[in-house]
Image (cartoon, rainbow over all chains, first blue to last red):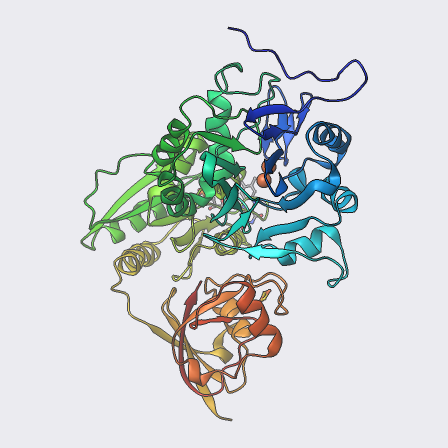
Length: 430
Length: 95
Ligand SMILES: Cc1cc2nc3c(=O)[nH]c(=O)nc-3n(C[C@H](O)[C@H](O)[C@H](O)COP(=O)(O)O)c2cc1C
Ligand code: FES
Ligand SMILES: [Fe+2]
Ligand SMILES: [Fe+2]
């Protein structure tokens, strides 16, 4: 069976609302020409901004809106299924502009409606709408709070950081329908709208997870049980296909993706340290080896050394995701660390790093900026950098290599919690 | 001048500071893993955990209390850009 695509326009110029369940309609918008989203994402066939209208015996709820440019399409679809004065409830699953673009106009048209946002969202709402603080009324909700529509009710799931601090999901209790926001979504535009009718979107689903959700892996693992416990007849995400056929499969896939990327055969008790270096004349390479040897003098630490010139960024990112510590060696070339190092570091936002140990080292000729810049970057990425980096001039002496060895050992002691504390006076700090 | 000591657990460094020092002035200098956004007590980015010595910090201002509430902070949490060390020993870590 080939499903009818969502009609882009009726003969009269209006857009259709699409029923997804009894008295639940999709009233979103199609954006087939979009190729790049939020700068960091590509899409080969556009995206959809999914908004939903739920009618109960005593109220109508609108769940999310669309990007501002698509407001006309959204309102046209909404008008097919509800009058503005019937709307009692507006829910925002997160406040990103691709879903809140039509909110100001919706609030103007339905001033009686009550706005429900996550308790993490008020400051963001203020920043987005630029209202003066008093003039906008809303209710903040959190895990387990409900809103009644008469014979049906909406219950909220607190799922912060997936992928904004204020992300929540909304569950239509009586029907087992989860309005999941960006979670379980993808950038894929197909007017046939349902997962069992659209083209093959699996790659988009995976890609979206990797780029949007993966940095928040721990939060995914915290949120999943809330979803796994639900009866799920339908998952209605904020982008891409609606999961009507086997919705639970998408939840399972999230769990697989959020659990280890690579099985780590090191013993559970061992800490892992990965050392990446790059070297033009071999000096930084020799340092890397000494750091490794030093680290290996400590029991319970598994050390790996890689030359950045010998690999692609993506598998290195996977390694770092699983590692407890990361040491980076780069020479200073033209006053900076070298590009392959920055290329790697610029991809690390894809994985959670907070609390990992970071360190930097490198050989230099006269000014030696690389190590300090790398340390700053590592701190910026929220790694802890307890051991001051080692930089040395040109070819390492035996004494300098001993310093590198001690540095490696210190990193390993830090990783295994054996390092103890250093006391300094604030006056000694630069 | 009376001194106090702040121990940054994540990097294993204890810093001796004059009484009245704000955490932000020390944590950035030693490279502890507390990150800052607005630096003026509004955004909540710099939330940290006081592992020990909460009583050795000056009481939070109204603004700090409000932001901590908005961030669903626990009783152990303070904002590093606001909190001032008064005396004794304080142990902190990011989060
Ligand atoms: C093209 C080029 C530019 C360089 N620029 C700098 C620089 O700006 N500052 C500095 O301290 N050293 C600079 N150096 C010196 C290197 O850092 C030094 O040779 C170092 O020992 C190389 O380490 P490696 O053998 O591990 O690559 C430069 C070297 C080259 C070849
Ligand atoms: S940095 Fe924004 S509250 Fe402290
Ligand atoms: Fe989003
Ligand atoms: Fe989105």
